[in-house]
Every structure is written in structure tokens, then in C-alpha cells.
Image (cartoon, rainbow, N blue to C red):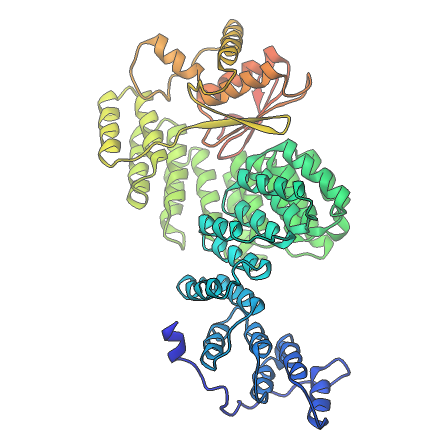
Length: 584
């Protein structure tokens, strides 16, 4: 704050010459300004209003400082108008410091504007001082200032601080709840966001487009289809189903839950006012399924609606091609992005191309692209190559890619696990032991695999070999029964991804008790969906080869679809096959 105070410009200094602008009209603030100058007595309220009006017109924004300098005794409303007029710029912070020097204390609106500006500028060190001042003035507990403050902390990725601010607001309103829901969803606290949404509705607060879209975003990240449907029903009752923000969130929610048919239905119903965000969400829904044809058809339709594809439109297209393993087409689309649309591909676009090439078995070519692209490869690029090397059983190449990942992210447990699995498949047990020792020496904590399934709106989470669930005994019995049945059909365990050279019985037990298999067994046990309806599983990591193989057989004995969303894509198992065509 001292640095900003030292840089402060004197507001009383003569203003710079203003650029020529169009002639005044009845709605032009200069008309009001002219009347104010001619008037014998013009109060502060008129000048305060002029500061705000001028700031809303880009060609006349510099007039706002000139008008402010004409106010003989600016009050807190005057200063707030000036600070708000320069929101999202350093000038707002400088004028706030000048306000304190005069001295004038801020009100809740001054602080709200200041916190929003601090969030836009990522000015965390500066914002701590106004937060302290708001505590002294008992304004941080005001819903208006408090909601802006908690939004600021969320944007700084400090959800615990935001939650504390929320808890200290005694008289919360819909805006506070909406800010909390959106912030939690954006900070990957999806379960907490849904709990706050439920609490908001329980307490009788009216929903807003932001609370509904935030809840849908949270449900989408969890792939919680039932939650998405319940929020959709609430949106219809509350009259938000035709809102463009909510409509786009619904498309995104259903798409990420793997129900692209429902996503398309919402998309078509809102097509008349659907913006580019909604189009990109619909494309992304198809892309996750590897449905490059539907993604391409939507892309071609965008311009017919008067919209222009952006980098996210191309990212959806490249993701679809990556999931479909079509690297030649991915290269063509990247060229089209640059030549036909003048868009500069980002690192994530090149990552899709590298991944598609590597998945197709062109490992050397993919590595060459990674080294020659106009960006320094990050861990995600090398991780894509590492996964492809593992898929193709290239142990030495995988170890080389793992080293590159670990140079950038030494604590990345997935790199250790993937290369260890490849070495295990090659029966290089000494190398596996050395790798595990390295993992222990560096104190890397392996992220546990977790899978979850939604039953009647409640999410049940499982870990490998988990006995914490209240129905564990019944779940394991059902799983034993299912695995026995698929063995009769010809299922043979895939041992590639076991890290230890152990006896067969223990190896089989380790494979059978993976989290995704437990989730399927629980779904069958509970009748989570009517007969013939899919079982929907979400996993936080990549689905393993054995579970992938086992689920093909399970669809035959259960006579139902199994849909799995892992960290990479959707897998739809039907009649003994998977839509990913064994590329993931």
C-alpha cells in the first residue's frame, strides 16, 4: 500500500486535454453536466452521478476525474464513485489511498468495489489492508461487502479464508450464498458447493442464475447425474431454464455426466439464445466421448448462427480427435486454427496433438513435435507421452518420459506409478524396487484411487480394498459372484499393472478389489438404476486395464451398460465392447 501511496497523482492537477468526441445527446452525461454548470446550486449528488455516468462511456471516461476535482468537499459517496469508475485498474487502488488521506472512511460499497478490483488485479497483499480496515469498521460482516470479499479470496485460491468470511456474515442474502456456491465450485470443492446450495434452499432464499449455474458446475465436476437433474428441475420451477447462463451450465452438466442426449435436448431448446459458451460446452460433451463426427458437425454450424469459433471451440475439436486416436486430422485442425481463423494455438492445443500422435504409436514423431513447438513443454505434455509409452509397452521410452515429468514435478505420484506398471509388465522387478525406493526417499505420497457412484442423489465413494462402507460384506459377496460369472465367459486377469511379483492368489485379490469394481458391485446390489439402465461410475484416476477388460464381460452377464468417467475420458461399455476402442 505504501508503494501505491508514493505513486499517487495529485487530483487537483490540471487534467490532460480530452480527445474529440461525438456531439452531446439527451442521454449524454455532458448534457446533465452542462445544466449543472449553469445551475446556481448543484449538490454533490449530481456530481457523484456524473462521475459514474462518465466512467461508463469509454470515450468520455477521463471526464470522471475532471468532474470529481470540481467537488469542493467530496464525501464517501463521491470517493466511492471515483474508485468504482476506475474498477479493475491500479487507479482504483490509488484513489482509495487518497480517500483515506483526506481523510474519508469507506462504506460497504467502497470496499465491495475495491475487493472486486483486487481480485481482477490479483492484488492479494494490498487487499489484506482493506480487509483489516473492514473488520475495524464492522463492514466485513455486511452482506454486500462480505460477498465481494469472499469472492476475492476464492479467486486467490484461498477457500478456507472465504469460508471464514462467509461464516462471519450473520445476515446472509442470496448474493452471499451465490458467491459461496460459485467460489466453491470453481475451487474444486464440488461437494461443499452442493451442500451450500441445499442449505440456501432449505433456509428459503430465492435462487439466482449464479447459484443455479454454480450448483450445476459442481454437479458436472462430480458427474453426479441425479444432482444435475434435480437442479435442472429446480431451475424450471424457478424460471431459469431459459436463462442463457443456466442453459449453458445445463449443457455442460449433462455433457460431463455422460448423458449427451440430455445435453443436446437442452441445447436445442435454448438454441435461439445460446451463446458461444453453450456451443463449446456441447462440443466438449461429444469430445469427451470421442465422438469427433458430432463435434465436427457442431463446429461447422457455429458460424451459421453468427458466431465465430474461439480457442475453446478448437480445443473441443482437438480433444475429440485425441480421444478418437486421429492424429492426422488433429494436425490438420491445428493448421486450420492458425491459417483460417488467425488464432494462436496454446500449449494445451499442442498437448492434444502430441497425445494423439503418441496414442497412434508414433512416439518419435510426437516427441519431435513436443520439442519443436513454440512453447516449452510442461509436465502435461510429457505425461501424455508417458501414458502412450505405457500403453504401447515401451518400458525404456516410458522411463525416459517419466524423468522429464519428474524434472518439472518431482512429487507427481502418477509418473512413478505409470512407469512402475510398465516395468512390472516387463518383469523388471529390480527396476521396480529401485523406483519404489526413490518414491520413499523423496517422500512422494501416492494418490489413492477412488471411485464413486450416485444412488438416489447420494454419492458413495470407494477405495481399493475398502471396508469402510456399511454394506461392505454384501458388496464383496456380490463382487465375488460377478467375477466368478465373468470367468466362466472367458475373462482372464490382466496382471500388467500390479507392482509386486507376488503369488497368484494375492494378485487376483488385489485386482478384484479395485475401487471401480466395488462401485459396480454396490450399484448392482442396490439396484441403482432400473433394469436396462446404465450403471454410472466416476474414477479420479485412469481406469486400469484389468477393470476395463472385466467391465466388457460384466455388461454381458448383467445385460446393461456400464459408463465410466475416468480422469481422461468416458468409457461406455456395451455388449462386451467399449466405445474407446481400447485407446485411453
